[in-house]
Length: 345
Image (cartoon, rainbow, N blue to C red; front, side, top):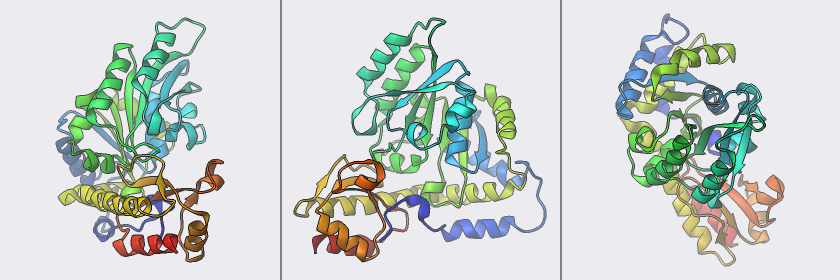
């Protein structure tokens, strides 16, 4: 009954097998391994982007921060949702890698930027004067920090506004696979076809040991990213172990299968909580993360039985009856049902 984070899940056997294969013999370091050649080719196929530049890093914070560093100069501002991971959970790493540029929060319900709020923000800042931060980038999160998703149409509306104002666009896709299977969109439809310039393509939250891809749909700044990655201490010498994870993740669409399992577990959990006396969902449940309220006795019984989840009162001063629950690729129906039985009493 582990619902604290999908980061805590084990690694699928296919990935461990790939790491074992990669461990044989010698391999060219720093991304020159032959496995990485296949990863680049496969990601370009998946995203229908034959010219895309593809790089791997070990963490989502590195992927987001290095990407925003490319899009946003030190005198700039990157617009994000007020609850975005880059805003509340990355210890100012984006600002550090942007050389002192600022994140500028934009409001919106359920974790999604409101188009009118973005319009008002852009109208206030553009054209920029010498006295204020220069709006330079828009970053969206899909799946959002509230467990909701943006459709390609919603991304296109926001990205279109940003591009019309001269901003670059970034998508934090730490849970990209979960958003993709929730909407039924193709990877291309959710990214470059909707106006996204740079994607942080997540793997760690969806079962990998630790690897994320940065995909630039315009390769003109690829060498700049290489320099930023090296200067930022995120270029692995034994890169083959990143490549091997991503290779297995993409093979036979494992990444989509893992996300479907996680999303299905969240849907089962959400339905069960909604049916409880006093149970209430705080946001729409569209991927593998949910926020809910249920009676205090349920909290106590579940915790006493060993369930792991975040109480919103302890996490951020929210409702003492609120909880954040995240399912992973290996969450079973039995775990969900046992948890619900403890909530029921």
